[in-house]
Length: 168
Image (cartoon, rainbow, N blue to C red; front, side):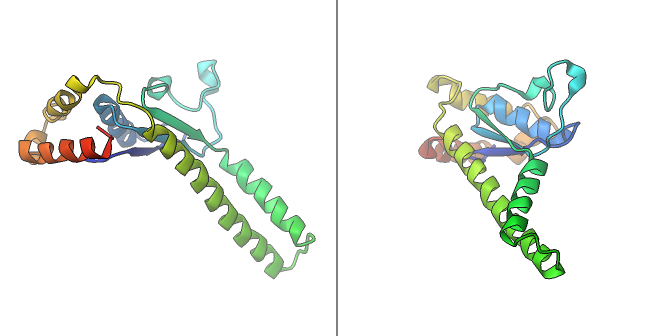
């Protein structure tokens, strides 16, 4: 509840249930959310060639960054090997691998940062009069004493900070 923004990693044929639950709570709060998927697999059984269950797609204030990590690594490694004139020495291969890792991290970080900047520009799906009320209601919804763990004073501080940051 206190996060300004959510980064959800949606990899695998079956998404992690805990991540999906956190995503659903974040979406019920109207939080800006970036979905990162680096898995190239698709659910062809849906007939739509989608990467994951459609119930977690197309939510407001959400940006999706899909990266084919296998293709990115293969292309970057080929470039690195070509730059080393295709040398097969263990040192040259290790140098190509290191260059691939460095460039892939930079590329992925750039995509994630662009996605985060884009989602932060999006407005809350809730009218201002409802934004605080949604947080008050969610405080009671998870059950198991969550309302006792997150006091009204704690929640007021969170809401104030989110309002100041423009992420409520």
